[in-house]
Amino acid sequence: MTSPGMILQSIINISLFFLLALVPLMVNPTAYDYFYKPKIDSVYGLICIICAAVIARLCIRRVGLPLPRLAGPVFLFLYGCSAIISTVLSIDRKLSLQGDFLRYEGLFTLLAYAALPVLFAGLVESRMQAEQLVKWLLASSFLIALYGVIQYLGFNPTRHFIDSFNVSNVINSTMGNGNFLGKFLVLTGPLFAGYCLYKNEKKTYLLCSFALVFVVMALVLSMARASWLGFACAALLFALLIFRYGGPGQKRYIGVFGGAIAGAALVFGVFAASGWGSFNIGSRIAAKARAAFNLQQGHGSATRIFLWGQAVPLIAERPWFGYGPDTHVQVYKKASFESFKRFKASGIIDRAHNNYIDIAIGQGIFGLFAYCGIMVSFLVWLWRCMKRETDRRLRMLLCAVFSSYCGYMVNDFFSFSVVSVSPTFWALMGLTYALQRSDTSEDMHPPGAAVL
Image (cartoon, rainbow, N blue to C red):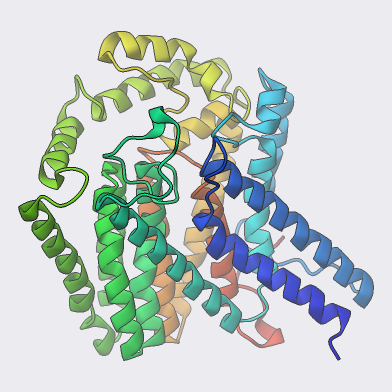
């Protein structure tokens, strides 16, 4: 007979699965906002369900609340505090509380982000469960990449009924924007190679290599230059880590992953020669490259440098706790006008296209310090785990996670946080803590980590 405790644990496990693997796939074609609100509302709802199930389970078992051990828990706490303080001191408290329309990164969202590493680190019960969650995340990533390629070929069932959103040369899959699609694939792409080396099965190598071809194709089709750079950094770092920490059998599979990337390049050549697709790949890549190296005009480096320059005096005006979460559209009103005059480009600017600058504007130096502390603590802990791990298969998966986060942080110099990608970013961090721990109760926490 199934006990109430087992039912509650099943609810928690299913909710964790939904958070990691299904939220990135969610769209709502009946609403004005296809992509963002369905995802963040689902995150809110699932976190509430998990918390309710945990409380009910604690009441039934009458035991204390089990808190996970995380690297740098103080920084995670400070990040949540910075969001609260910045909201209290915000230039628009209502906006900071609820979040801006189509961004939704107000106080509730930031607190949800901070909760995700704690939930995944504390509630994933075993390494086997963590491994299964990684597998489903990869399956979700493949579907997202596949849909991006299908969009390029002209089939787009989620093409919005609002005319201004019907841009034929935009590949965004379920992420809502090509830049966000690229950013998501930077985070998950290296995990395909790491998971292959972790499972060490011919079937897994075949499936993941096949999926990686579509991931690289979708990444290029996203036309997200920052993501191209981030993925290149992540792939190069992962290759170096394989040579440093991998065994002889693992090193030879670098050629397999290189072959998958070469296969994607071959498909692009066929597309370019045949004229298939919703836009010409070669001309678009050339235009993106020119804009990236043009520091005076164009939608590329010139606009990024301009916005970063505009942000410096803004940060200096309210340095410690910023203007409030998601108030960027108000803060950047003057910059929007100046950008229109200089670049003759329409549109409202609400981000600096640099996540670190955006955090400093919204949550101040205090919030940026906390965020960077979270990332540095996590990466230092992960690096130590990689060096200490005796299981070479698990070490390769940890190396892939390390490479993914490093590439993601490079990407963040030219992009910003968004609700279609960030929940996966924070959840995967918690899942990594769960992956590193043993299935035995004696080693339930990451070695050397502090208690939250």
